[in-house]
Each structure stands twice: as structure tokens, then as C-alpha cells.
Length: 220
Image (tube, rainbow, N blue to C red):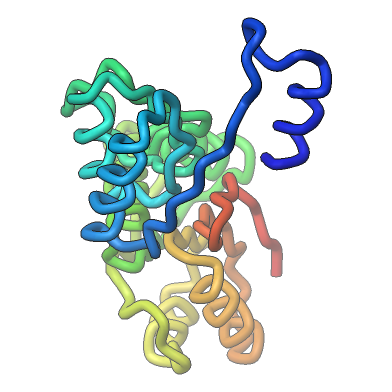
């Protein structure tokens, strides 16, 4: 951002004004995001590139909105941020949970040709939201008998040993194993699944820190 600011300012800025970048750290915390928003508003900032987590973004976005400050999130994917909660000054540059889930349902059934699917999430805002929406978009395929959901459950995030759930997946042997959560848990699950001889295709839509990745198939 600093490089972009310098390049733009060298060309005369925007509408004849030089751009200034003001930074506040929200510490990836809901309470600190409010404090950061309050500081930026008090400094007269009118446009904010906000944080990536949905639960962290929401309270700050409310403050920005009430003060007519434009905020643009680059990784907050929760549907509720724009579908259920009205914020006319809030925008985002990434797809919502439901768009990712809709893509997965089509990808798993129509591209991979899955007949059985396991869905696993980390019970956090992002992971659970995508998993719940995936169930919604897969339901028509289930109702028509085209596919079967053989597993839907949550893991405890940031664990080092996922052997119990990996054993469940191995025994169920789904065509596709879909995980929604953070990249660190996805990596642990995938490595332990390979060691255990799981043959299911592993597909994940994962959050990393600080970037939010899209659907990425990881084959065995």
C-alpha cells in the first residue's frame, strides 16, 4: 500500500490531493477492531481497507457505517455482513461463504463425479458458515439420489492429533472429503490422512493468515 501510495502521489495524487496512509492495528481481535475503528474515525479518515475476519470486521464496520466512512474488507466472507445486516458504506473484494459453497457443490458432484461426500469444519465463523451453506447447495443432489452425505461434523481447531477423525474418514471412504477452516488444520488433516492411507479426494476452502484463499482441490 505504501508503494502504491507513492506511485499515485508522484503522478499528482487523487483529485489534486496527496494520499496519506494511516495505520491502526486491530490485533485480529473483536474488541481491538472497535478501538482501531474509533481511532481512525477520530483522525478524520474517510476510507478504510479493513481486516479479513468476519467476526472482527462486523463491529468495526458498524462504526464506520454510522460515521459514513467507506470500509472495504478483503477477506470477510460471512453472508450476514451484507445480506442480513445493512451497511451501505461497507464493501468487500472477495466472494461470500455461499458463493464458495455453491461452487463446491457443483465442483464435487458435476466435475469430480462424487457419489459420497464428507464435510468437516472447524466450528468457527468462516468454516461453519461455508460448511452449512455447502449442505444447503448439495441438498438438491441428495434429494435426487445423485449423492450421499456420509459425514458432517466439526473438529477442534489447532489440535496436533486428528487421528480419531481421520480414522472415521478412512472407514467411511467418501469419494470427496471437504474441509472448511484454517490452512494449518487442513495441512495437519491432509498429512495425517496420507499417513493413514485415506484415499478420498481432499478438497478444502481455507483461510490463511492474513490472506483468504479460494477453493483449492488437493488430491491424494
